Each structure stands twice: as structure tokens, then as C-alpha cells.
Figure 1: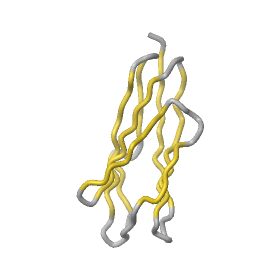
Figure 2: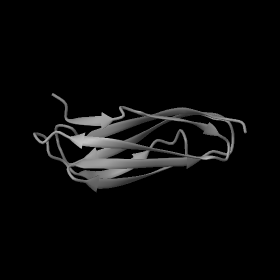
Figure 3: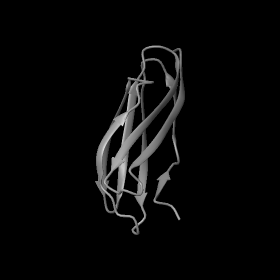
Length: 101
């Protein structure tokens, strides 16, 4: 039985240098394992990414966006800390490719 369900299960970005790219991911909670998000951060692999967390009707929606200045592979992760001792962290994998214009 899952603590949460991620929809989609990871984030894939594809775009060109200078374009803003965006994606959303839903975190759907299992009612047997209540939790709140207490902290969040993104790994340092890609500092061009930003994210915002919104809570709506029993789920969280994470909005992720970025603008890249050079071609590169995206490999990053958002870590969400929770107040549930059985499941203290949720990881959201972010991968992708930014190409020249």
C-alpha cells in the first residue's frame, strides 16, 4: 500500500535555451497516512529551477518552472519533508534536456 501517489511519477522537461518550461505534479495522499509538508528544497544539480507547493482538497500540487541559459541535461530532485514519522520525505525526480535555439 502506497503512502502517496505521484501523478505523473516524475517530471520530464524538454525545451530550448531561453524558453520558460513548466510542469505540475500532483501528490495524492493516502488517507491512512495523514501528513503535512513541513519543509522543501531542490537539489543543487540545476539551480535554474523554481517550484511552488499548493494544497487543494486532500492533495498537493507542485508547480515547477525554469529558464535555462545554455544547453544542458536536467537532473534534479525536489525533496519534501513531512511530519509523518513513517514517511519523513517525498522525492520528486526531475529530468530533461535543454537544446540550443
